[in-house]
Length: 283
Image 1: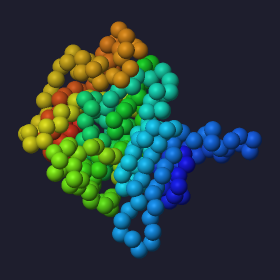
Image 2 (image 1 turned 90 degrees about the vertical axis):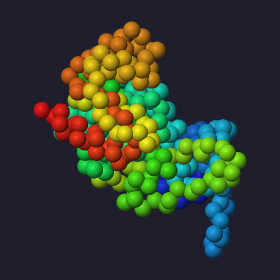
Image 3 (image 1 turned 180 degrees about the vertical axis):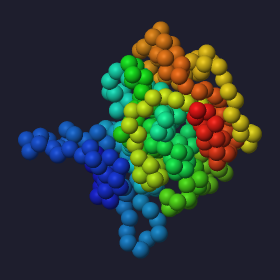
Image 4 (image 1 turned 180 degrees about the horizontal axis):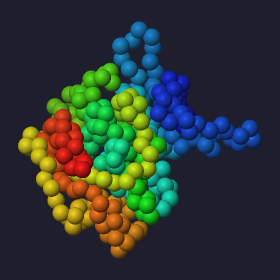
């Protein structure tokens, strides 16, 4: 990673600085750069922020005014690289939190609100961090493993986490006037910022399938293990690689877990409903 502003690199190092590598003296540093950040021009005393652009090679990945959102796009690209080279794991599109009795796995359709739900659970001291949108599952021991990447929380959902002290989300009034939907934008949030930590590999003890429907009544609906196996298989990002074995692996993960659907009309209510369900099924 290279940048026109050292402050951006310092911000990114807060989240993945432990993986920093030194370039050997006989190597060209340009051979190492996967991402390039142009942080724009900012002058002291000027209220306007410089426009920022992030590139992967020659491909533009981000264009906007937020350092945090540009870092989120960068870390999203890093996560994609890790997931594709993670070795012999099942890759589930899911959030996850690990308690002292096992992991709560939350497989989901693609939804920008899932990381915020995980973040709110961590902030409630529900457990340690397993994943916000991707969880790796060991196909032999059936344990859930976290990725070494922070949560990437939708900027609009940071209002549910005021303790982070992030700037309120900016409204893109030009897009609103033109009837354009707001594009999703993510910001990195570490488990430590939420009073938590990355989890150790954990057995899957609960599987809840969140369904986000703003304004709907929030409720937990128990489901059979057969339905849970089908839904978990649907969430696998590499089912095409595992083939028929993906059903067997999903069945083995589900067999010792409590299973439910969780309809979430409000993120705060969804957090409370999940905590109550986990507590009531802990025996």
